[in-house]
Image 1 (cartoon, rainbow, N blue to C red):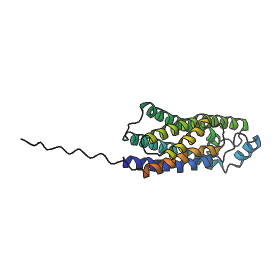
Image 2: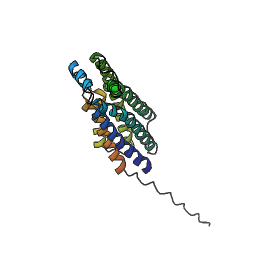
Image 3: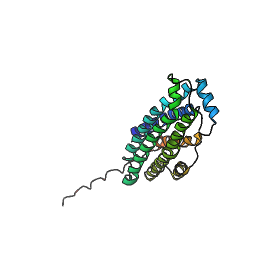
Image 4: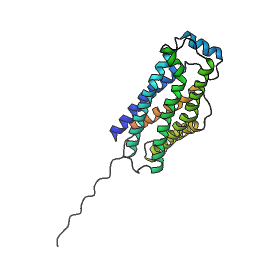
Length: 226
């Protein structure tokens, strides 16, 4: 179990670094509520489009790290007693997959215009087209990816708590963070930092957790012949 715990913690922390860096870089692109003039000025200057494109390249690396983290967590859950609930275990896998898929699609839409501009695209960008792509990306990330992340947080927290890895206080924090992701209606980029906070919490928990020692094997009673 220690090997799975170290892999889960290490891949989780790697995901946090890559994900936060990617989101900070992508946030340099004009936001959905910015005026058309902000879109025109951003793409006319051209300098920041390179940073947005770099953030776009980091997103798949963050997603791959998350898949490693999810797989390691699931392998660790299989070693716990009692064994995890089959339904929660299945929902956990589906929720993590939905999060990564929607994250990839949404960030691709948000960064598409900047990516094209950084690769020598047309000198002028239609603000309406750029805003439409941003709207698609925001919808995929903040409506679908964030909900998948919320379900992943809720199911993983429940399974780790049932297996004795997370104490009651840590589990309550995890459930509150998962509920926020599942029910939140904000599209502020800061809301995406809730998932990395939870991943750090879980990484620390699995590293400090010590599985109980197995019960000693019963000593056979010698047979005394009369």
